[in-house]
Amino acid sequence: MIHGPLFALVRFKVGAFFGTKIGRSGRQRTVSTIRIGSNAVLLIHPWRIWDDQRKAVHVAATLDASFPPTFIAQAADDTASSASGNARIFLDLTSLKVPVEFHVYETGGHGFGMRRRAGAPGTGDWQNRAVDWLQLRGFIVP
Image 1 (cartoon, rainbow, N blue to C red):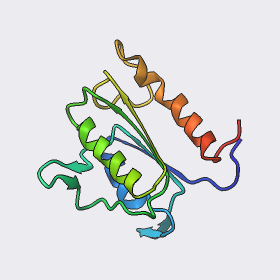
Image 2: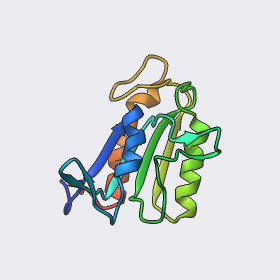
Image 3: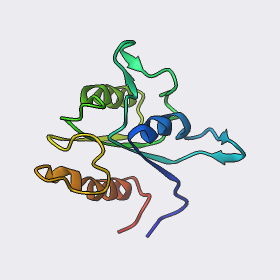
Image 4: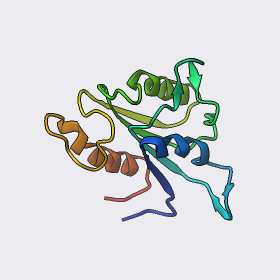
């Protein structure tokens, strides 16, 4: 059961990149004619949010203390998106005192989405961890 209003922005791959752009808490953004804001962001194997050349979050993404509580799931062997870069995002959010949870699965590659991959059991588990996290944050009631 959802407890109170919940707008959770769940983004996969490159969509997760844009999720950091529009998933801002406390500030409403206008995309086309739709005003959006979220009180939770779930980034699932986010694609290149960390800019390795700049050693910072990509210029199109902004992290600050108003960013909503964030859940990140990532595979360590993802060659399209650096787990170490997403770990830096986790550290940045932590230093900003933004509630954040980060799960790194040893195997799974990029793009595991909602399905378990052979030899990568964690890729089928992140949904359960996300539900646990949403319950912890008080967004859903068991």
